[in-house]
Amino acid sequence: WSSDVCSSDLNSLHESTALRMLVDALHEAGIKLILDIVCNHSSPDINGSKGVVYDDGKLLCDFNNDERRFYHHNAEITDWEDEYQLINGEMCGLATFNEKNPEYRLYIKNAIRAWLDIGVDALRVDTLKHMPIWFWQEFTADMKLHKPDLFMFGEYGFGKPWDARTVQYANHSGMSILDFGLCDAIRFAFSGEQDGGFTLVESLLEHDHVYRRANELVTFVDNHDMPRFLSVCPNPRLLDLAIALLFCIRGVPCLFYGTEQYLVNSTDGGQDPYNRPMMETWDENSSGFALIRRLIDLRRSNQAFTFGSHQQIYVSQDVYAFIRSYRSSHAVCVFNKGPDIEVNVPLLGKISQNELQCDLTQQIFSVHGDCCSLSLPHGAMHIFSIPGERVVGPVVVTFQLNGIETRPGQRLVLVGSASELGNWDLSKAYGMEYVNRNTWICETAFSDSAGSSVRFKFALIQDSDPDVVYENLLPRSMLLPVQGREKVDAVWNVS
Image (cartoon, rainbow, N blue to C red; front, side, top):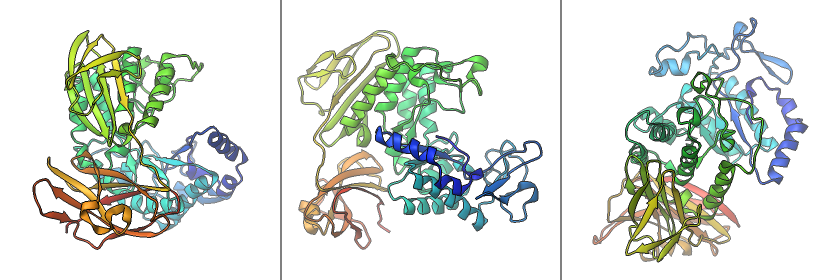
């Protein structure tokens, strides 16, 4: 659901019967609604009218008569590497809001709160890179105060993990971002537009440690601002492989409408507007639809896909195999976009079974020692899912720790005032799970301590070293609910 909230009437939002009916119907069907919001700009010049915004039927601002300084009045962006131009310049003639004006900030936040009150579940935030990070920090804090469990992700256009400003916004804006770097790597791997094949994807993932929440990056293979995948790689089977890869790799997968129907119009290379054709059919029997439904079921049943570490076990131009692991949950994922090949896949001691059955094809393969031999025809993909036991209890808290780059032989634990955290006894501390060298995570069940306040901190333990490194700060604290799930994002502190 996408809307330019800047020109909306807030009073009519609260009274929007149709929208409330839509939200209620979606929720009844188990579907959440993500709203695409725009805080950076309003309308361009249309027949002499530009940036005209109404609030409750009354004129709020007008770019051409901007007495209340709601807008910047600067030239078009010409240098897309210049931060001042990115934030203050115009983009495509759109009227650019003046975020320094507190009256504007109050207006836009009230507008978004009105959408949330109707029942919107999450926010996709447009043009993240075109507003200063302090604005987003204020905005996300106020939105999450209004709706504490709100998930937000921003469009930092074409950002990459080796770009410092991209990483700054991903780590410090208060929201996740769309993973353009992974999108490019997957598209190049399948299209051949750049050399490297699957090694491009693995190389991109090796940068994950720069992000504080790489497992919350929103991943995709195409969107409304680029040609569809099938325009750059016109092979439906390879699209199937790309979709399956997207669902197996870390992050939150996001699909462009029509992908499950192989929707494409490659006129003019599939550039806008040909990347946005109308959907004229909806076939629930298409192979793409069936594949996506199966992949969704796998992600829901196996936490290795959502929380797990990523270990590459075989990679070449054409073949990619890796293991995702979290606690006792594992998933072995194998893809071949090239010619038929036989490969031996090491299992790294993760799998104790004598045979593996693919959750996509139902084929069964024998495990010999710590290796599985696979015959992979062109277009083959196998996902071997081994879901473990989940952490359950009246209250389950997910603790995610970033900001400490660990080495082999080191592990992190969570210790605290609650019995579930060892009552400060390090020998009874709660062990955390490795995600990447900058991220550790654990889910902790609280029963005796549910509904009470607990204090905790993280500690680093080095194998064969009696010295323990504790965070150098007063213990953190949180008030546990009586029941339900909570999430704590923390940054290691030794200053």
